[in-house]
Length: 293
Image (cartoon, rainbow, N blue to C red; front, side, top):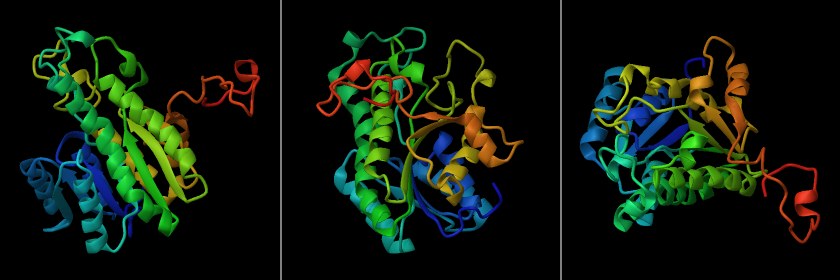
């Protein structure tokens, strides 16, 4: 992207206190966006804001401590951003917790679903799925009113969604993936798009615990998210909705629009699902048309 491709845009990035969130927040700020980072931990917010200050000056990024599992906190984030910047254009649902919150050694000793404590199941689902819904719910009316907006959801690789030993992480991301396809349809003709962005494999963040059974240098690095998220957040992606983009497939050596095509596929399972037997289409599975059911 050319510098300042996001000039005049206002973005909210959840989970912006570290890992991929911090990388994407800094990249969008450098492209000219007014960025608010949201995290439940103030120390993580402060660390990212300090990095931002070294690039864009003091106060160049707004840190906001909030619990996205609470509707009132999500509403408060949006209200604060609109009050400060006058509008909001982009929501990046990046906040998430991983399997290490269920069991630290999950990579060496996979967690079978019946071993997951219900309170840990609920806590993970609340952040990864409920939190994204609450933030999207809070921001959508503002985006619709102005006739332009972006909701970008960070999910995971499709095979991780059903990988054994990944309950409930995989399921939480499958829910958000399905929501992306559904919300994109809900928002048709509003100027607001909804897409998925994933790194494309295990990523070198705190989600991978120390002592994992592989060399961390072989992991996907968080900075692969920078170029595609800036393109998705910009005017260049107008009309692109209901898609998933794999950051590790993004080729920064070719024009961004070409890189986007190379990294893009339909979100969720729209490309493989058969048409269900709804009343308006009783032929159902016999129908030749392939689309989301």
